[in-house]
Image 1 (cartoon, rainbow, N blue to C red):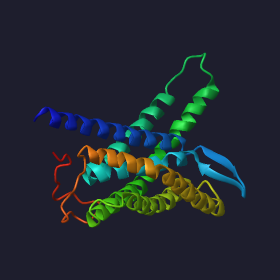
Image 2: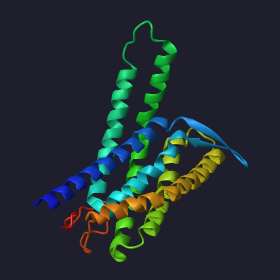
Image 3: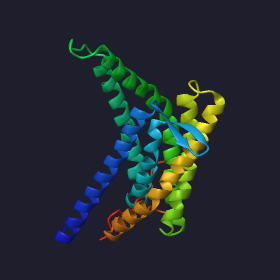
Image 4: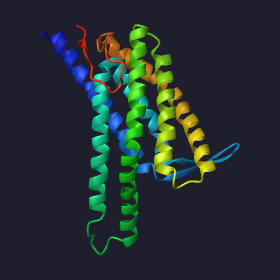
Length: 246
């Protein structure tokens, strides 16, 4: 490997680590804040959202960038790593929150920590299958369309795949995590408003994500899998060409 190839490999690893950290951070913030409802005053009235809604779009946008440039195998591995990270954060957070505390630490603060971390475990478990399904669907379609259109139209492909994935995620996660906490009418409104809000944020982030994709592709980071790749988003990749094109 010559010096030029070594530089490309270093950048390949650097950007993948940075994107993976952004994805994990968005997941953990979502899990911690999901059960903290927020009331937002809009022109037509007040809407209630789970606090994690502000970070959901980063999850899908980051996955699309990784899928487009590093390939769906990298995204699927990151999805699994993300769930493990959420689960460990929840389990260790609950364990520490329920440990004994010194006299100078207020009982109300102990209860606050326990309330926050206790709620994360049910959210992580109940939302796992929904999030897994939604993210794999998004991962599958953005790359399937990449093969069909030879890597063109990333902006449109990403928006459409995220719209499908977010719709699945919004309905399933809200039903599983909040179905017993909110009246049906308010839950329905929360789903609708939440979905529109997430898609609005996604629309704002889509151009920066496209610029990141362009930059990565200019470095030669542009994975193309065989057109014979398994159409099942849960399936293993049959053939993968090198993600680094020298």
